[in-house]
Image (cartoon, rainbow, N blue to C red; front, side, top):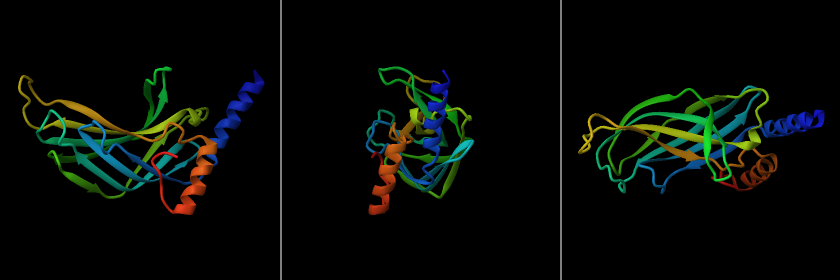
Length: 186
């Protein structure tokens, strides 16, 4: 039993030793009504994952059944973890949300300034089994036939599931340094 605990602790420590890493997450071209691209960096700290976004682009798809205006209420970063072999997942730890209060119509694009998020983590969490997710909270602004009131929902963008795995982080760092760019997935 002691060996298992030591290995889990060592595995976690490796995930923390990657320093600042470039980050690019995108849901552009997905089926979500509100899509986004998020470019910046992350750093694993002792009690948190710090995310600094240099560029954030939001886009409202024209290919959704709802054709009205959308209120983009907030952005929030979270850690996700798989809950079943079928690929189901849940959000396990969340940053504080950043309120936006933006109204967008289908086809609209919006650039946001630099944003910072801090996802708290517990001392014993194994980050190598988790990945980053951006939640975009939105609501309908125009009436939907047959419904009463506004409807709220979420759109998402995910990092690669192996973002915190040590070998991937090392390879990504070398590649990014050589190319000077961030990748959505290694």
